Image (cartoon, rainbow, N blue to C red):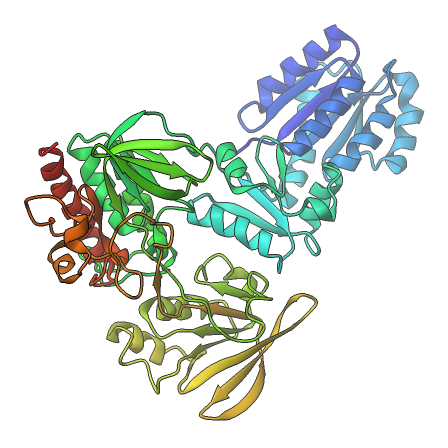
Length: 552
């Protein structure tokens, strides 16, 4: 935690050195001591300290300074630190001015020079003032702050990106937060600048693009090598497992993710059926452990970057990125997973990001406090979100087309939901329409067994079905009717297979119809759609990569 600051200002170099010496002798353990002999420099420093989210506990300022009087300085400094204690250093002739300043700038005390010995004439006074200041002192949040409007889709995107990439941040509503108003005034921000990301060092990025924000956060957005042994596309559980095993087995490995590591599993508030964690763990915790482990083995992680296409020449694969760059590799593992299917109902598109969200319930949980929250979907992700949101929301309603959850959700989750009083399951129900005002969701029109009613709704989280993220794969890679990638022996039943596959051997278990390109996890046709199976397939894919590389 940062130390609060004691700031001393006196135009006499000899005096300011003595002041700083005495302050450091008694307060350096608990406070940072700053001093200067220029009042103008001090005012600039005070503004800079405020932008950097530093805290000033006490100003100790000389009254007679040529650049400005001490009282004038304290008046200006008070605009930035109204709660800081203010002490004037005066000569006997300045006593009247000091007394007048008690009312003008709410001066806390004045000390006459000289203050020797400090143990009798300086420390007791400052000790009392600092003790009083500490009673009301609440340490400032020291991390990243996001300013924006609660129901702005752009604000949601920024919060979701930071959360998914495991960067702690403080959300400040630009309309209602006093702290937000303070930062807006300090940095001269306007509504058009929102959302704004404020960093501890004082830097503010206005309405940042994802790659700009990623660079500022220190994420790697540019590849460092000309050629890789294996490139893994997608950093969900399968991709992370493949990265860990690829790195640990000495392969030059690159992992590419278009948004954030973890995939859909990374947004899960609690995974309770993963082997080795009897008390469960969050998707974020699993992701953090996995990405740290992969990096420890020397893999390169590129994020946020999107692969637009794969081409092949002379056995080598070329990956075209969204920024126009091209990456060459000997083998590829596609682990892009699935996206939630869009909910087809009137008004859904209009309020997406403004009360309606696909997954990512953890990002908006605080905003759901004492609110009416609806969840669409009957799978485990929906159930985990319902349990998590029940800690914040007034009521959580799970909307499903079937009569109950038994056919789509794990029994342990159903048991939890049944004992949570503010979770209600709405069976045989569909959402027909999303209604809003002031550009945010306020109501939902529900159809229950043919009966229509309109209900108040502050938020809607959608977890319905899944569609594979494979539209970008344009080369001759065989997919099933739903777009999932076919692998291994299942390829033989397709008529086009023999026209594409020109190897003497059969495809490896997780290999696509293009040699050296593999698929694992939820993106693969026939996958089990469980975290543990995705991790297993990611590890298994590296085994087949080794076998393929031995051929070339």
